[in-house]
Length: 148
Image (tube, rainbow, N blue to C red; front, top):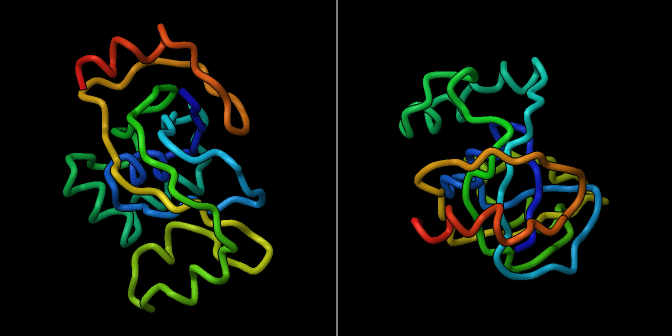
């Protein structure tokens, strides 16, 4: 299974289905199921976002009181990667009050990966992530996928 590591709180927002676009400086040709790994590193700027709206409300509704509660260094779940589009086109299609605009960088020259069918794993699985889209060996996710 393909996987991507995201910094928190974005990783949690993706597996909750609240973040429907992952914005990147590069496109991907991958389409299909994509595991979401939460990186161990969480910069102070990302911690601060957990206390700002709309991040705070969504995290609290899902039982996370703050940045210390979101799991890190783990595979959290998976999503279906449907498409990869120029980010400015997606931005122009979103409503001005969409939380999605706060969750990504939709500037011209960037890419928006369209995601759907978020499936959080019942128990996150510890795993060492890496950069880019990478392959996870089956034994790393099979026990989690079977119980999902």
